[in-house]
Image (cartoon, rainbow, N blue to C red; front, top):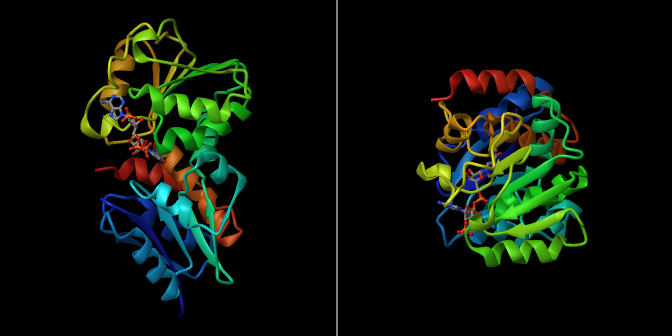
Amino acid sequence: MIMDKYVVIGNPVMHSKSPEIHNRFAMNTKQKMHFTHLLTPLNNFFFVIRNFFNEGGKGASITLPFKLEAYTLADILTQRASFAGAVNTLKLENGIIYGDNTDGLGLIIDIIQNFGMPIIDKRILLLGAGGAASGVLLPLLQQKPSSLVLCNRSYNKALILFKKFNKYAQLSVCKYSDLDGTYDLIINATSASLENNLPYLLPINIFSKASLAYDMMYDKTPTIFMQYASQHGAIIRDGLGMLVEQAAEAFYFWRGIKPKTTSILTMLRATLT
Ligand code: NDP
């Protein structure tokens, strides 16, 4: 049987759950496709992805650190990828490379539908100004929170994002040292948890018993950020649901079918090692 080829491209990449998720989506929706890891040298993204497409590859998930390069590679961007300035999903159709960014919708679906917390009228603190933060900023603002404060260790990077989205009156920007008061939703979009660190200078008074502290990172045990937030009263959630939901959106972008996510999320949670 001929199978359409898909990959997740990154460095490192072998830890990625994307093949597991997409091969299961394919099985459940009866799609003839096969999904694998493609470890890519840091300085060779363009060569590797073009080669993959030239050899018949249909689509790719893009992970760290290639989302910006994928953005420059795409011939046509979806509106959300264009606003994000980063691409996490590529597909080749009729010789044209299309780029999308499904991270933001993945986060929104996980918070609103899976966790059950509406975002409208909430006070949000978004930590980080890298690829993940820029991907989720617009989808979060479109949910009409009462305020969204963007905070990053390198203040200039937060300012660049702020200028891009400052037509949204709810958006403001601050330094970690200026953080004060509690938030309803605190999203850790920094990569600090990957190194088992807390975001730089994170104060404790941002958390309350009603706060949801969401770490985009996931692990078999709560991340250091989740432990810290929980010690200071917050409800916690990791990014596994976001991962599965952004993958479902990517699958839809490639195949035009939206797979069900609940059983895969349960299975992944049970098998996290
Ligand atoms: P980037 O490398 O693009 O950005 C990293 C960000 O983290 C920067 O803003 C950086 O700040 C900040 N940072 C790093 N270390 C610290 C620290 N010790 N204290 C404060 N800030 C810090 O990474 P991404 O944006 O692509 O990814 C961020 C996280 O989101 C990763 O953990 C990734 O795994 C996760 N992610 C999860 C997804 C999911 O589906 N669950 C999807 C996408 C990402 P500075 O600018 O100052 O360097």
